[in-house]
Length: 373
Ligand code: ADP
Image (cartoon, rainbow, N blue to C red; front, top):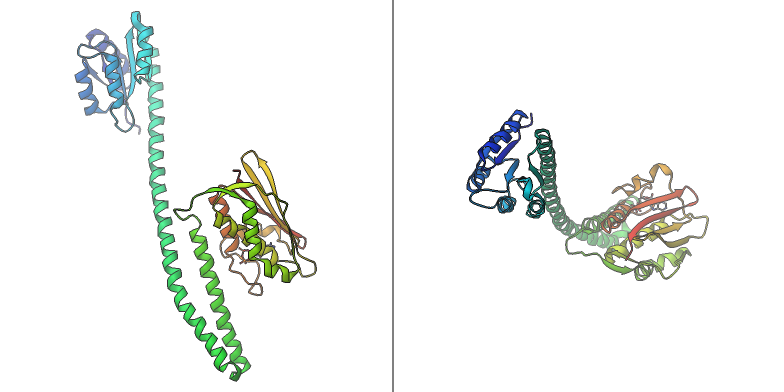
């Protein structure tokens, strides 16, 4: 059940105050009366009214000054004020009252229906203002919690990855030593076991590395700035120069590419991940051809497309491949399944979207938007 709205009816003229009070009480409001500014301030503190109906003329203070003071009182939201004045002085008062923060203004004599309708309209406005304040407070709380849990997660990821890397490094060193020192004397079966251990260690190291990168994308202190994509793409391609040459692949990049908003290290990682996927998932029967294109899709946005002529992806998987650990291939092709999730996080952190267009056996185009500089 919604509580009965509380009104404070302020007028030093007893007859006018009584008449207004009766109209409002019979309309279902709880009404308190005051005859002076001092009494008004006391009753506002005591009853926290939803609305104050305020006469312009009060014996101890100018009514419009009272309105200004009421607007400085912060209860849950600011107090709603309906200023009321004698008609003779109305035009000047109306402007003055609204400048002082009054929410509405009425002239005497006030028609009872107009009075009740105005009060109801102002109360609806007050309720909406309250709901907004409440929603904003909830949002602030959720935001703070999200920030805290993000920080916790980042701290956890750093600590966990450091503590996990250490024993893995030890395992890796000692399995390599076993392989070097007694590898030749082992049976084929034991050589196989040793290889499984070494592969597992390498995979685990890659997984920790990728998870750490994933958790660090939105890290505090990383700021977005204007970045020239030409430099970003060159850096990503140079990291892949060797395997790209070995595969005989060609990358076509029309220059100049645009400048966008982003974090430089994140953007290099984004292009590196997508280009190395094109390389990894190439079709063995044709020469790998990759194309990078940029198109201004709106005055504030560029769409970047990285196309390949690789094995392609069935439509059923176009969404799920962006989930962490989602892989469509077994361990025959190395990978952790974190790459595209990382790409999505980087793009979303920069304020964009990412998606794939692909036909199996023909190729894939990974598309993403970035904010124009
Ligand atoms: P990973 O490559 O480590 O498996 P990703 O998150 O980068 O993980 O990719 C998820 C899956 O999406 C891959 O396992 C692969 O099946 C598919 N995929 C990604 N890029 C391509 C591509 N260019 N062509 C075909 N399949 C791809």
